[in-house]
Amino acid sequence: MKRGDAIKAIYPELERSVVVTIMGAVAAEVQSIGHRPSFFYLQHAMGLASSVGLGIALARPELPVVVLDGDGSLLMNLGGLTTLARYRPRNLVHVVFDNESLLSVGGFPTATSTGSDLAAIAKGAGVPRTATVSSLEEFRAAFRAAQQSGDLTTLVAKVEAVGPAGYVTDLSLLENRYQFARHLNER
Amino acid sequence: MPVSVSSSTLVYRGLKEVGVRIVSALPETWLVHLIRMAEDDPEMTLVRLAKEEEGVGISTGAHLAGVKSAMLMQNHGFLAAINGIVSCGQLYRIPLLMLISQRGSFGEKDPWQTEGGGVTEHVLEALRIPFDRLEAPEHVGKRIAKAQTLAYSASRPVALLLCRDLMWED
Image (cartoon, rainbow over all chains, first blue to last red; front, side, top):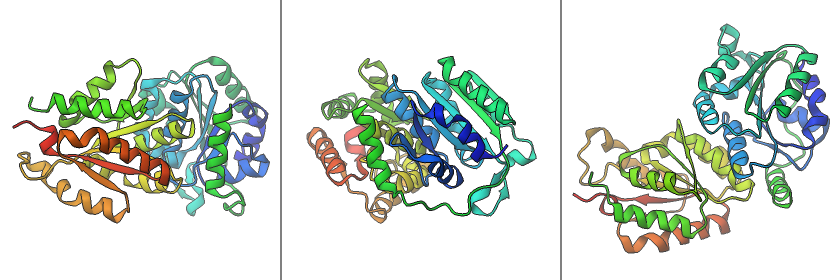
């Protein structure tokens, strides 16, 4: 499964959600499919996308929140999974695109390439719903089930280590940040 | 325990008066009363962290969602959170209100706390983070309010140092 195809597969379902993504390929691919004011791309601070999602979910428990994370980012904030599980925001779906690689900085393999299992780590941290999927059909179904479950889910999607040619887009970081905050304020 | 209950109460009241509704924290001796007050307050959401840097993300999310928050941490926790403060808080112009216990100053008896105190203010200066010291009860309410005012007008992280003379009763 290619990550770009996986994002396309759930793109219609993202419309009603507030979305926080990591930097690099995920941010660029989401924008190439279509930016929305409800999408925030954390273009640095690796590891903190799930924490930003938790902050939004706690501040606005009525809003459905989706975090699009990656294996390299999540490995930098594994402790954050325990915090996520502890506060168990039922309005948050945590997707982890696992390409077993730090693709944006040269493709160096991460620990998931040698057997570290992020869904098992999330389960061990106390996340109530976890799954690993590797086909597009499984991913689409598991994402929909997570959105409908009304409980915190970490969904690990195994994807190929391929991405777009470049990562810089014409949406400036602060434009995105203020547009997103205004969107949340009006919603 | 000689952590000042009265000063902790003043600090907590100061946070409430500026509208803080989410507090993230990692336990440390000087913060015990503050954390308990946040836990006992039905109007406050206390987020207990595994590592302080997570608090930057949580406060960022809360701010983007329109809710005021504060981070409670030891100076060593501040040192552990620096990448998040720079590459999330500063990069995205987030008005983080950071309350940092300034361990390792004159009077410190714990040998393991003595390095952090010597570098904390220099690191804050190097990061161009505006900060002030809370050393006496009369500083507390006004300086918390002023710190938050600047955080919002500048859209930047700010810090208040919880100092020994305020927090500890020898």
